[in-house]
Image 1 (spheres, rainbow over the protein chains, first blue to last red):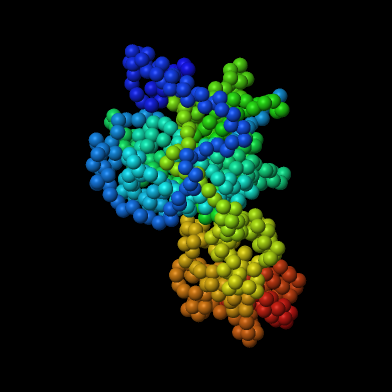
Image 2 (cartoon, rainbow over the protein chains, first blue to last red; image 1 turned 120 degrees about the vertical axis):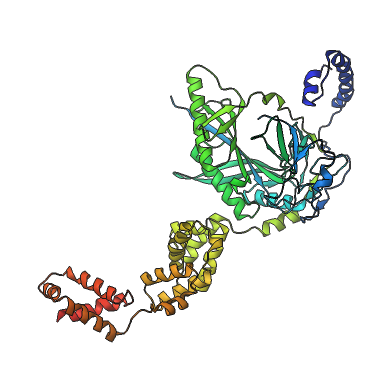
Length: 92
Length: 476
């Protein structure tokens, strides 16, 4: 199965050299080709599986349970200022 | 040959819950940046989302109010894209099976009503907020909004003009406020609209559409759509063709520009979210939600007309919001003798004064019971309607309830014949030439005497009695 490795890499924000792409392309193609075998199964009348376990969604009561832990939570961030995360400029 | 405009709308409505869609963080507006976040809405590894049941309930309620199908089993999917205000790298949304499908909304148009189809309503989470202005080489990110619950309400391409689009949006805006499923404050971004606009020759298939983003007021929506329609028609008539793209409307310039370039990234690679099992809701629960449905604007308007005999105009004004309707009903409960008088005083006098002050019925300094107290004094002839307006002004200024103001200012209507006769005789004595004139046939002078007597009584004489006694005494 042919896939556009550069497009997939761009969507995933992974930088690939042409050499890496040439190496990974056939591997990804093989994986997808293997999975593609599933489409040979006749699924007429079978309900789509939304989740592997037959459980319903647990639901939460609408009451605030989280306190402000900004200082702790921002520790791993490379850069913050006045409580805001600082990231490389994103232009609209 | 003419052109036909085709519009479909996608509206993002913030569900007014206390907590976010999938975690227990507060949703309150205006908090210090990033103080309402947790590992779940920050997208930290290994955290699991748990759905806020209130979001499902309110979305189902909205679906029932637009006569839609509620899917007893719906599911959540991941919509993948990269942006720094989306820490997980995907937005939790509902793609293939939304909770609500196949509804409609009837909107008012020039010649009656038009039915606009609602394709679906799905639950999703909001992204954070990025700030770029005044910053060099960096952007700032506040994730307080990350994970706030949204309903995305998607219409069919059923609208044929900017006016119809605005009518639909206003109807939807009023509905979600009535249902108390959203504050729908447009300035706070709680009700946001994207419009898909295309043009075609009548009877032909749909043309290529452009998607307009960033429409955050009813006025801009109309302007943006009209601008886009003109742009597309000109383009086609000049031999060009419309490109499917996203355009950003700039309200200060009154024009839109292409966001091409972002287009390539619009490959969302939806797939079922393995962290979230299907959302199941029983028919019993749906029935329970339906049973709790409040009276909707149209029903309320009809009831105000039939039960209280209001004009369609007054009924419409007083059913605009749930707060207005509730206030009016409380007023009628306290002054049941005359619901029409209640409507007149509330719609014209009270709301007029509140509007001047730039405030709203919920902030009215006068309560329904206090206004009813004033109307009681009109009904029992203690004061005239004219004096009552002054009393209301005083009540608005916080001078107390109607009886207190009437007493303190000595405004009680003069209703005894003796006092009124005395005033009339004084006025006649002061204006002998006019008495002469009236008696020689100048009937119009009667109005002059009424005015003078009312003035001399500081407006407190009962107008009916003044008329009656003047006729008698002027005869001579």
